[in-house]
Amino acid sequence: MQLRIAILEGDDIGLEVVPEAVKVMKAAAAKAGLAVEWLPLPIGRAGHASHGHSMPQFTVDSLKTVDGWLQGPIGHNAYPRGDATWINPPLRKIFELFANVKPVKSYPNIESIHKNVDIVFLREVTEGMQSGSVTFAGTGEFRPNDDITIGHRVITRKGSNRVARAAFEIARTRTRKRVTAVHKEPIFRLACGMFAEECRKVAQEYPDVSFDEVLVDGFAMKLVMKPQPYDVVVTTNQFGDILTDEGAGLVGGLGLAPGLCIGAHQAMAQATHGSAPDIAGQNIANPYAMIMSGKMLFEWLGHQRGLPEAVAAAAAIDAAMDAVIADARALTGDLGGSGSTRDMGDAVAAAIG
Ligand code: NAD
Image (cartoon, rainbow, N blue to C red):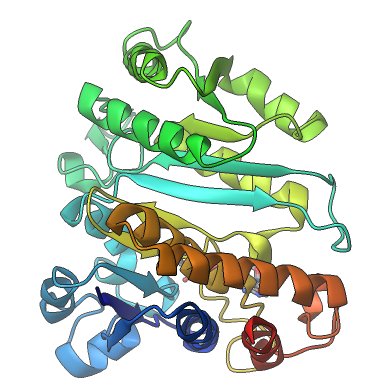
């Protein structure tokens, strides 16, 4: 079986880090005997230039034909309001990419607040706060008069159940096999209550995975003080938005924060960082997050489509990245090295062999 993967470079440093991720993925696919058809598609300024919009309908239609895609960051500041501002939330809705999976991993030789951290966060991203609600001008907020603003949060059994199930499936593939649900049920009895109920229901179907629950305020503190015991953490949209940045901060920051938005049939590899216009065009951006997002795409497609070659390609990228980080010579400036974006991509591709 051949995978079909689209490449959407995005803006600014997206034009630099996405090609490095593709280079590494091609090397890993060749090594593992995985057949991939690559499909470049315009988005961001390239979308404007070719189709007059940062997310052309042509691109959306083409994405319906692929198994997954890599998406670089959008430089929102460069667009008129109302154009590029809402690319990510609507895309997640159109393709029902309901969970943003974000690993947080420390490395022995990279400066970080904590060591021996290896957590996978799953943040629900199609409902809750900041999901790009279809009501109230797309933000989930409205202002009935000049003195009052009302924000709303929609939580459904379907949305809670599927993100919980995805968390248990991921936990099953890991050594510690533990899922922690983070919510605030004692206060938000209905919304967090429904989310927690669905997590508990799903937990009963996975007796091989241990399950516990922590209230979000206490969890934020425990994460700062002692993150090591956590394995897979599942939570609602806005709690996840905040906690995943906190998690990235514990192990070295944005440059080390990959992500994969997963749905029922497709997935989108997307680093947490933005388009970093302050360093764009200088060949100094750290490609780690984009490369490891691509690795996650291979891994997810491998399990989803029953393709051991894709799982092997992901494992090859993981091992090569570990080797390049341990060696340290090709690392970019933000990781304490003096390598360029291309040096680091080349080193990872070369380590794959
Ligand atoms: P940013 O993540 O782009 O940059 C924050 C800081 O981190 C900057 O100093 C930047 O140089 C640095 N940085 C980010 N990624 C890096 C990397 N890979 N290597 C080395 N350093 C890196 O956040 P921002 O400055 O707030 O936003 C810039 C633009 O990106 C804005 O237009 C914002 O709206 C957009 N943005 C897009 C996405 C997305 O499309 N997924 C996400 C966040 C921000």
